Image 1 (cartoon, rainbow, N blue to C red):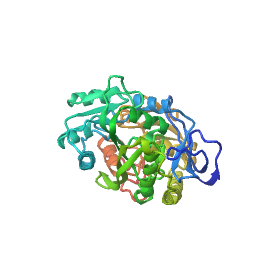
Image 2 (image 1 turned 120 degrees about the horizontal axis):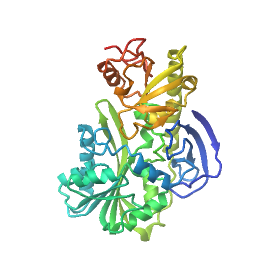
Image 3 (image 1 turned 30 degrees about the vertical axis):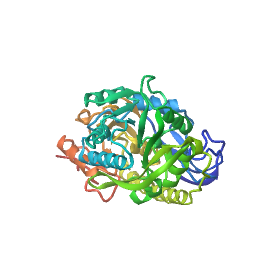
Image 4 (image 1 turned 90 degrees about the horizontal axis):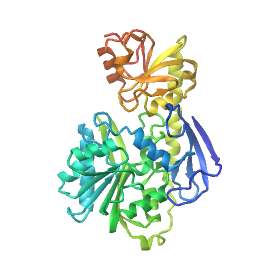
Length: 417
């Protein structure tokens, strides 16, 4: 899945950090996507030859991504998604973000918009910090309704399609939003339109310079949704390009589960559009080399998974895949799975159930009762928990895992209760 760097064709979009159109293709990422999926099934990952920014270059438009978050949003369901603050790890993450905002903003009276608010977890954390004038914006109507149920003003739309009656804000928060944006210039123009004069942007994204330090699954950050891979320098270059002056830019590590950590970079930037041309682009020397290491190790890991699955699938004609998310979409593109029929995919996400992937239905766990096909657990993060769930359901299917280190890596009958 990893290819040597080559000069790329004319890009579908320029570099978001500096606007250059000259790039080097460093990877081709492929997926098997559900029927009706609004996002492409493949794209190039490229490095800007001017500033070193690394980004995906899919043949798509911003509208495609807006439609995805409106119709396929995994953030609608507070029980299975981040952004709600329901889990203790998500609540701690949101509390830390609210703390970072509160120490950088000059006044608790500042009006704040959380753009991409999901079901309102950060709004709650900001209110707990003493901010009373907080509101949410999200493309999903269900997310907006959930925020209003929590007592917040909420608007439905993206920052580029916000309702005309939405007021201006002293600060707009984009926490893990910018990595999803296809049209970065339009994004910053829309953000400024909704800011009060001299207002602030809080930007937080995954830290791509540390992907390789927290590599739990191969190519985990090269998914259908993540388009932009920021470092601290890339975040500064991007903000300055559009007239936002860095006030503070820092790295942090987020705990997302008991055994899972996630690197992030964040900053507070003040609108200073008069000086947007005064800061030259600083070439990021670190990001391309760190991404290259991440891709190399991911490719090695994916090849090991393909080899392990191929040996388990010898003489197997049909399987059930447990998981229909981003990693499963990459897994289904492996050569070993092209040789077998997928009978069904199991997923706990209600947004996915009822859809079709790899010509197979996506179903709930209870719907595979009575089946006999081997179950492939299509994750590296929660394998033992899923194996335990399979046992609780009383399923006798053979269970195949992707990792030799997992307790659920099992032979025929390991799923028996």
